[in-house]
Image (cartoon, rainbow over all chains, first blue to last red; front, side, top):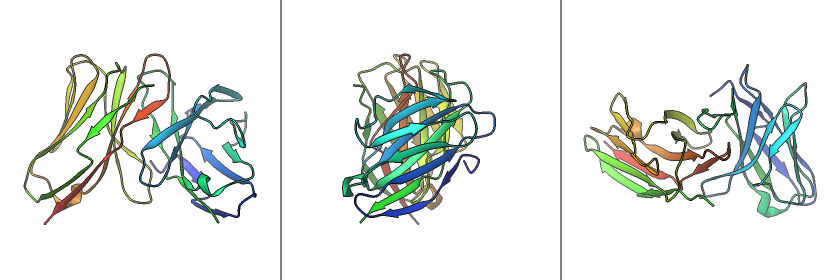
Length: 115
Length: 111
């Protein structure tokens, strides 16, 4: 899955700071998904985006979290005023078609640590 | 809310043994994917099953999708230490595009 790029791989922030996580999908993929994996838990869906559109954000916390996938450039997951509970691994995945049988390919993740 | 129950959560076996991991739900899925995740890395796709009753083989791994598309299993024959890792099942519904993940099975194969 090296073709789905995420950066940074590790991010350390103090409480109250902002965290910006980037995801570049596989070449030819226009559908991006963000998932969060808390320590010792499974992956939980956060948001699904296509270019310039948020399709489903039902898994995103209502406050402090936002996501975008601009026409040019990577998808960005932004967390404002981070708290310790935001410490987790954040994974993005991409797919070519976005259909209900479409396979999602995952990036290596960004591990966020909030001090 | 769709839930995927994965069992067992932990499995420690000797090299050469066989094992089966189960993934069950009360919901119907349009497709089900199995991933393997190494520490510090993202999930790596092993297989996608789409048709009810479908069986797919990947070397010593056999994946089955239940007839009713609510459950799946992963069977490993003659496990090797290299099979050690976290195995995740994930289902996708007809209604949405997000994956619902099971809690994972941590497999350790001892030499």
